Length: 488
Image (spheres, one colour):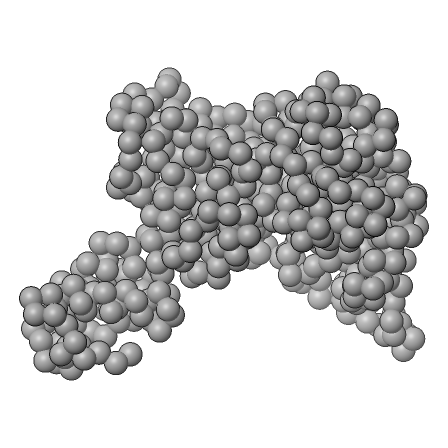
């Protein structure tokens, strides 16, 4: 980068230099991990005192952009957050993508599995066996519905793990749940559906898939028992998208009475789109049956291996009622002619051999340790926060009732200190208490502890209103037992 000290206002050289360095970090000229020039070297180049440079570096350290590492020098450890404001749904979607691209020290974003645990050896062994058995004809265009071997393996996997009895001919292989929702949006609109109910709070990304497919989304509240089916009936929606096994982001499970009421609504003509989000990742509760297992003719069921193996595989499945199957297969054909066949066959072998179940047992143990570490850290550093959804999944939701600050401000302050987290308001359609969604699967125990400590620091520094109420949320008058945990 080119620095001309002559551009600095008189009497503000330190502030000018810190600002130029901060801007270079923000635009990637000085990426995370890069080392700043030694203070003596930069001072000589600019023809200023070494103390001026040291003070500029110190200002960056105080805001979390850099840190001193002894002989390793001063290193960039965090970039400032994007400047865009998350005021409207399309802007929020863009900001989520922008946030994903911003480098950071610690990533507590939800929806990210432990990518270091990907079973590389097992995948390579399965791939070698698959390649050895393929004929030249197998390298041509595959069936757009999916490779028969994977459809059969998915049917077996769902029977063993989710209680769903399905014939392989009912399975459509898709590029993750995102594509499943996109295909369904197209098919449902062609079938006359215009309004789809969605959980509130609920996944912003899932909602946008439906809206991109030109469907109107209608918010239906979620409480401790799951989706409010009475409100669903009153919404006038023809279909509902929901995550009944582990609701995103609250972590609650749709309870028995609500399930019966929902299935009655579906039996009378409604359509349920079941995103089986995080269903395999459970720790403190028994598995709940998939809705698809109870009413196949009224439920579209979508799942994937994005949270179990890796999102980059883009492999998932979709089961729909018989009347929608041919239109969905046609939509898949015109979308991309089908998923890549080789990856499908490798996944089928992992499922059939039992290797995928072994991997699931392994990551469950690791995720449990990391979840427990996050719960301990929250109790220590955010003792008045209310914690939701600890019994399953890969994330926790925390809320700050009556706290007197915006969760977007807290997330931005944490990001400025090098820690990513999603503000809960991004995933709401109606107002609600501020909160954060914190993923724990992708980081080590040490990173989780440091990340939560940084959130505590960011919260301490926030301008806020609410006086005594806010102090109680911070834990100065904490309830007995530390953080309030709603296990869900």
